[in-house]
Length: 191
Length: 190
Image (cartoon, rainbow over all chains, first blue to last red):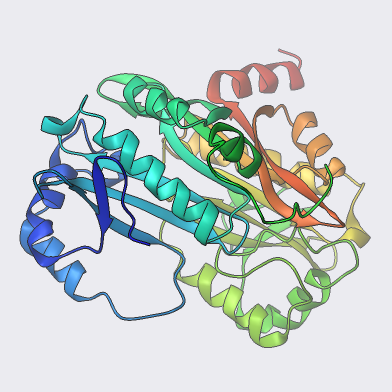
C-alpha cells in the first residue's frame, strides 16, 4: 500500500528535496518554533543532515516528503516523532505557501493518520502548535483533533505572547470519522 | 562552597556525580517510584533500573546543555533523597521542572521546598515567563503537590501512559511569572 491520498503521495526524503526544506525552515511563517531561528539554514546544511541518516529498523520518528500527485511537485514535508510503539506519536507538517488552501496539507495529514492508525496501530496521535497559527489549528480540527492542552503564554513569536496548544485524536475518534474503515484492533481497555 | 541559591532550609541541591550511583539507584528503585522518577527522556520509566541504566541517566544529565539535574541531599546528614531537573530545550521563555523525592522522605514538605526554590531560581535568574511541569494523572500526590505550589492545570494529554490496566493522561501544569510574584507576596505577608 503506497502512502497515497486523493491529492498527494507521501514518500521518502530525497536529496533534491533539501532545497525546499531549507526554504521552509527559513520562512518565519512555515517555521513555527523559535528554537530553529535564525533563518539562515542552507541547502548544504540540510544535505549534510540528509546524508548522515542511517538505515535502522529502530525508528522513533520519520519525515516524509509531500508530493502533489497530479504534477509531481514537492509541496513540503510531514513528520511523526516521539513514537511510543503501538501507543502514540506526535505529528508535524510544513507546506510551502503556493500550496496553502489547495487541500494538499489536509490530504497529507489524512494519509499520515491512516498510516499511524492502520499500520503502526497507534491508540492516539498528538500535535503541538500555538495560538498564533489558526491555520494549523483549523487543519488539525478538520482531521478530528481537539485541543487537550494550552500552556498559557508559553511562546513569544512575531512580537506576541502566544499560548502553546496541544491537540490529540484518539483511535476511536479517527475510526468514527472514517466509517469506510473498520477497526479490527481490539481495544486495550474497556474505558 | 556552593552558592546559596542552591541550598534550601533543609537541603543542598548538588551536582550529581558518579559516586552517587548507589544512593541514586536505591531511591529510584524504592516502592512507589516507578512512573514518577523524572528520568531523562531516553530512559523509560517502567521498570527497576540496573546500575548501568542509572549510570546512563547520570551521563544523560551530565550532557544536558539546556538545563540541569541536581541531587537533593539533606543538609543535616548529606543523604541523597531525590533529584530535581530544569530544562529549556524548546525555549528559555517556558522551561519545565520536575522533582523526584524518595517515598521514604515524602510528606515532610521537602519536595515543595525544593520546587519552590527552583521556580524562584528560574524566575529570578533566567528569562522564564512560564514554568511548566508534567505529571501522570494516576499520581494524585504529585498533582496535589503542584497545585499547592500554585501551578494551574493547563492540559490533559490523553493516553500518555498505560498503567495498572488502563490509560492515564499526562497532566500539564504551569505557572506564570506574575502569578508566582503574587503568590510570593502573599507567602511573605506583603
